[in-house]
Length: 143
Ligand code: CMX
Image (cartoon, rainbow, N blue to C red; front, side, top):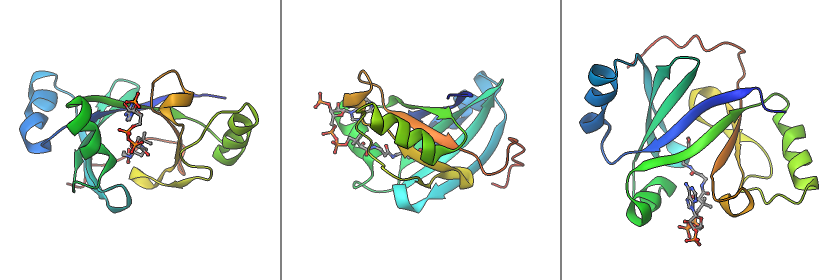
């Protein structure tokens, strides 16, 4: 069902403040920065070997990430699992009684289709199912 960990989401208060740590200290290539209006987050993707890190900066106080930082502080926010046939994967999880935040896929960063499981139904971890439209990860930075 799961192909790989597509990315790990990390909540940050300021992209500008933390990016030098990732690009200069850890020397991870910055793939792109984009705004996901529907989630009220500005995200930066960095390549980390075969997976990616997604830094999430809230764009407003209504953002789920703003609430997360307020309650728990900056840090690891979610794990995104790469899947195919996301609609079917959601149906399988629901059949197993797993509470979904998203009962049908919605657009996420990079044009992916995404759906979140509720952390209360997933041992305290916020998992995202993530289906890429293109099969590769050939994102050229357009910053
Ligand atoms: N990881 C683990 N647990 C989390 C969590 C997270 N990231 N965020 C919230 N929780 C826990 C809380 O600690 C809380 O647990 P307790 O009741 O034991 O304290 C519980 O979930 C409910 O949390 P809450 O603070 O009351 O917040 P809400 O119920 O309003 O929202 C959640 C929580 C997960 C439903 C909401 O954040 C959500 O819908 N997230 C999915 C969307 C999202 O995160 N988008 C941002 C990134 C999108 C992107 O990558 O593009």
